[in-house]
Image 1: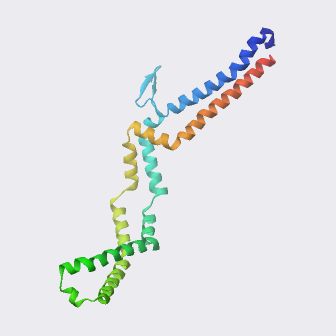
Image 2: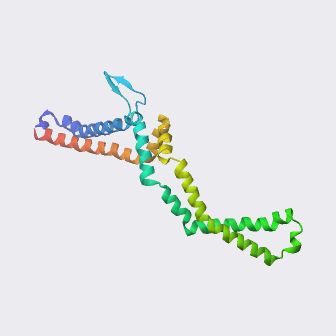
Length: 209
């Protein structure tokens, strides 16, 4: 029995074994998380080529993110539908109305001072409403033209891929830690908890021996 070695030895073993195991579990997982990002450049350690997972796979990560964004998260069809939506059309119409009103009230009279003699307020309102109505009807068509231009001239997948691939190692680490910091801390915590439990199990086995 372990108690035969003396109560003090058993006491210290009982106190330290789970704690040491927890520290080892935390340290192992912490090292694993660190090795996701470091070393940033390939190095030889004990004859093995070692490089952080994300720096080594940055190009592949960039390609996968580009495909994900272009195919699943963002599409030109979504943009097209948004530009045709009532909310967007109403917003653009209100903006057009304000600009037309400003033009008729200020710029037109400056360019043609004599216009004030022939255009009363009712006539100005009619002209404004006619212009606004005509321009508002063109908003969906202009939206289609805009999206068609983007489809031909903008490769979303390539934009995302090139942006991510161009990140420095510091920027990539900062971005991923900003997104997954809690998850990484959780992994480290799980390592500590599992280590502590394993330490208790080892202590129980020693107790039974």
